[in-house]
Image (cartoon, rainbow, N blue to C red; front, side, top):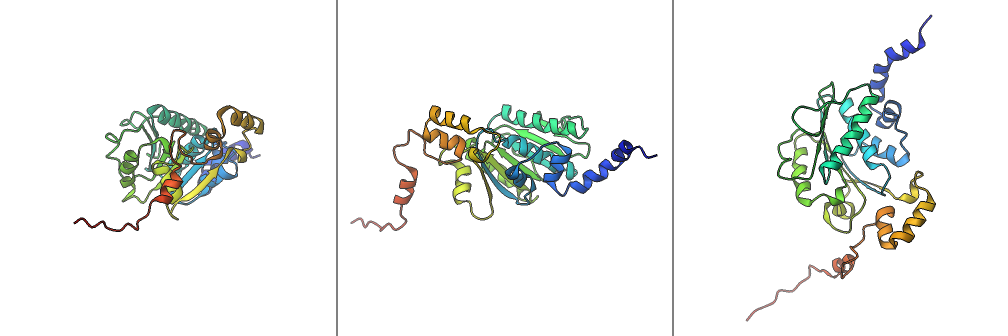
Length: 261
């Protein structure tokens, strides 16, 4: 008589390989992450450029950690970089990725070169980087760059990481809650063009956030802050003298040259 548990165990590696092309299904089955519809879109898309504009507590770090693990597991010797505003945030991201690796039966270990890193048995790596433009240069052949809390990462750092994709043809995904109408994240969302896949995830569409909590937050923090933190709206800072939209509309390129006699 067949031992069904033994049969399942023997077939498991093959099953994993078959699921690898379907990232959403692979993450659900192998990592035990029950992605909702929007999270499944982030996991399953083939877009090389993506923007995730999401509410606080939506689970963006968790779903993108799952995306990083799928990339590393399914593509041997690949390199995924995770950029965050601080070392603490990058470390937290790698902690979540390490937890997913344990579910695959992989004991997380560093790559021996980077303080915040994970290396898989297939030689793929996930490396976490804090915001420091001066020290991140030198990475090449990058398969995937994930920019966490992108609205709070500097434009200088963003410009420093983009060339890392020049030869590899790798993917760039940026995720954040809005932080005013400024910086590269807002620019890409508002004016970035058709190469970007845009996914918006407000709290009102997140089944994990109770409506009663949102009403309490609206009363506590006020409408402007609430719409930014939970409704994914880019708004001017409270201290701004003029609405940035009015300033943009007032700017014209039709300026006559002033003759000086």
